[in-house]
Image (cartoon, rainbow, N blue to C red; front, side):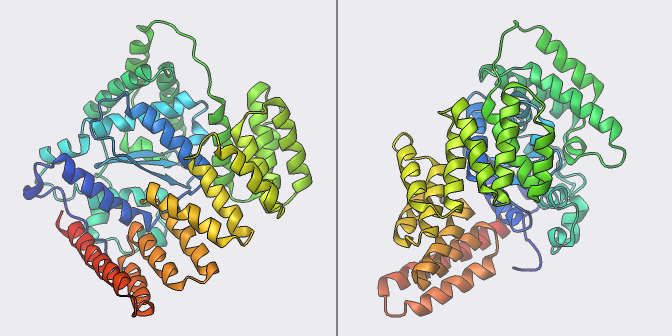
Length: 460
């Protein structure tokens, strides 16, 4: 990878009027650069859950261009962000602070409002002489938040990028009030509990008062005042009182996010054991967390006992069934795992988590052709998902398709912005396919496309 990420400065005079299409292109270029420096969470279940929630909220918002791309970052801090061009980022730490799906949705609805109102572009137009306000500064700011300023995260950022990071995504109070109002409207239209916005605000305000110098990045970029909390409460108090149900799926996803944050299964096991005193559904989520932690420690007897207990309580819960399948796979009971996954796929043939799970089981069972067939389908339906290309490269390597390995790796490296390595992989494949005229033509075309991608990033 080159020493610097050359993203355009949006603050110069030539970009004083940024079109939605340019925002879209910039956002995708920005995402490639960002991915190369952060610890992305690739849990298919967590990603699928957040994508569904974002889609639900976006469909009821004022956002016109709904080509949204999600990135989930493994980081314990409270943070979510929206980048021009439809990029929404969520730190797994947000699940630590949100106690219900409605609270989580209140933050995401707020970010969607920033996108729909094009707050970043509007601020650039107002401050077009300030070259420090840039997408590059935004990149530096969010890398810092995601990596705690580690050398690995910040390496290669230019002086201009780091100089702009403190101002890049700091919304004005007017922007925040507008996002609050529209976010609240989106929640109501989506059938979600609007009072969750004020409860989330109150929790954040309390956190900011006790955080001293370690104020979460979200609160730095989204200035929260008592006035905003009061304003949100007043708006909510004017609404007709309704009863809202709590989505239990959120609590299971929260357990998965906590396990990812803790990293050490012993730590997550202790955490969930302390939650077992809860009653009702929250206790079941804690049992689920204990089961997954034991699975990570390869304590399969305990794992299976707990999963069976949960399945007796809620026999139709998909996440319990998928946990059971994962346990079978880890115990090398591949035939059973495959049969159960295929049975579930009959009811949801396009399920991303189920298809990824089946591809992994086939790979572990040395059924490389079957695994590759699923991943080839997934690369068509999820072409911008780096994990799909990464897994495809793995299975092609195990099946002996070396040119295919290089081609899949090239797409993976393009998506994470490592263009030098992507070019190397394409050249390796070209040498191996020297006698295949048609594939050589395709590779040559992809090399030209790669040049254009790099040029587009420089000249947007």
